Amino acid sequence: MTGVEPLPDGTTLVHIGPYKTGTTAMQGALWEARDALATHGVAYPGELAHEMNAAMAVALGRVDPGKDIDAFRERWYAMVGALQDARPRVGVLSSEVYCEATDDGARTVLDVLGPQTHVVITVRPIVRLLGSQWQQYGQNVPVPSYDDWLRAILDAADAPDGGTVTPSFWQRHRHDRLVERWVGLVGADRVTVIVVDDRDHRGLPAAFEGLLGLPDGLLRPPADKTNRSLTFAEATLMQELVDRTSQPPWTSADHGRFIRFGAARGLQAAPPDPAAEKLLTPGWAIDRALEVGAAMAQRIGASGARVIGDLGLLSDRALAPAEGENAPVTAIDPGAAAALAAGIISKLTGVHPRPEHRDLAGPVERAVWSRHRAVTELWDAERDLAGARRTAARELARRARRRLGGD
Image 1 (cartoon, rainbow, N blue to C red):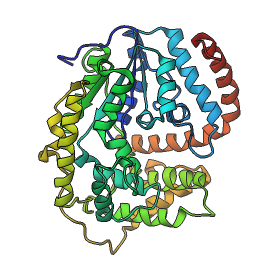
Image 2 (spheres, rainbow, N blue to C red):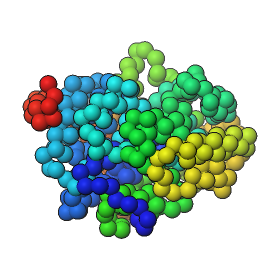
Image 3 (tube, helix red, strand yellow):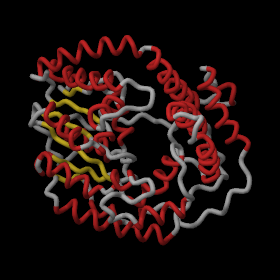
């Protein structure tokens, strides 16, 4: 990217998110380009595009329900050991999990990676995050209606603890506090903020190319429609299901497998009804979100961190979502209900829908269902291979710790 100075040789770039700021796109782009990256002296270690549980184990001290925290902690150390062995010009770790790191977790990450760690934070206008985050929360936990959730969230924008309703929203998305925290940990000269402009699809990958000293166009986020936004009716249906399955006898592991990675993925992988109403955001909420964005831009600018992009976008009304208020849902699309049910059935049976069974014969649709099938198969495979991975990861971790001077 023109005007972006590459990071010094020997740097480890740690992309800490936060959520919904292009992290998945960049992880996919880095993963798909691994071989090409290596020819330019850049390493992106791991067995998956996003080593989420490995990052969680070290940064948060927990993993997804049903996972082995020791195995994933050792897996993270093995990834660092792989970087140490490869001695790349620049190493890259990426996980939005790091944005929520505990104090101990952040110190561990920085101490193990060493003084040439450079933190990259991607930010988007808050006004662009409200709808997607309400939908995301609603796939995992019971949440109030969109209007009530907006009032609770935006009233708590300045609260130090993030408020009482989905408090992780502001823990993740007070981008100014996030930047200030990491500047305090590593120094302003080791933090770069990239402002994401949703109208410029090349902007984010080009910024990473500039930081990593890569040729223009090498990083190309893969097309992926399996994580699309839901329509208002679909979100309402999903939240009704979550309300009914978030208490015993359902466990958190059951909920994650059958609802988050079953029902929700089934809905997202199916084409939406083009006539269905999208989620609308009230004008008062847009005004307040832009006000918060302007305040955050001022503090980020004053932090001393390097900024790539225009901080003015954080308060630009031109980027606001569709304005209005949705009417109550009175009917559910049978296609949406069937897609939701199919997602659950695929987790129960291991049988994954084939494109021709849903009249999805085009290459894009086949790719969507292929990705959906791969995600669900990976969930099952990881569980079945946990024992073998644990043994291998522990051995690699022991070797990595010896090289890194650990115990």
